[in-house]
Amino acid sequence: MCSDLKKNSYGIRPLAGRRVMVTRAQGQSGDMTALLESLGATVIQCPAIEIREPDSWDGLDRSLVGLEEYDWIVFTSANGADFFFRRLTEKRADALSALKGSVVCAIGPLTARAVEAAGARVDLVIGDSKAEGAIAAIIGRLEGEPQVRGLRFLIPRAKVARELLPARLSELGAKVDVVEVYRTVKPDIDGREIAGLFRHGTIDAITFTSSSTVANFAAMTGLDTLAGLLVGVTVACIGPVTAATARQYGLTDVLQPETYTAAALVESIVRAIGKME
Image (cartoon, rainbow, N blue to C red):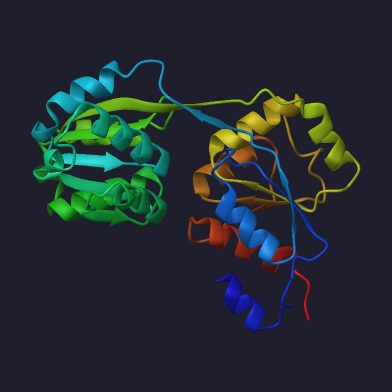
């Protein structure tokens, strides 16, 4: 990872003099910011997303009453896990024991870490963050598509998310309950100042960690396409879905690490604009 880069052809602070904009939600960018700064970068915080509670807990609360009835609980993000367990501990004194009969699945290592931080076990960690990879991993765990039929799945997630995972599980005969445990909104930020930083050439790289951060950043700056604004700027996206959204906004030259983590994202930036010894 980044420490390995330091040991090879890059300097101890390969991003010295570079200015990197981080668009992650406030309070969730600490690890990435610390890593970038340790490599010499100046970090400009521009949260393009806010994480909030759902408008209503009714859907989740109904599922929590009969939590033992689910065969699988699939967490698709760390945020989803955080909000789920926060509500679970509020509503049930036997919070963790209620999960004993279910297969607890986490998509991505950060999601798994969030589940474990709540004191729960993780039975299956899926490395591929795309729904297609998650479906294949679940089918593999069950040893074939026919084994999905009749199972009950609970998917706690954001209000707005891709429908492929629950739709495919339903097609295979599963009963799937998708419940909203958080929502993402666009922060109330004056995008003119942000746009000015790019127009004056003061930003070297920008990171996007979800499709929402891309779409919200464009909305904040009042632009339908970002190609003109980000000319000469290194654009780093954490995964293929985010990268695809970036391309929809005109960003054709996008960095995308093979591993969908903040550390890998930073490493891709170092490789692109890091200074050699």
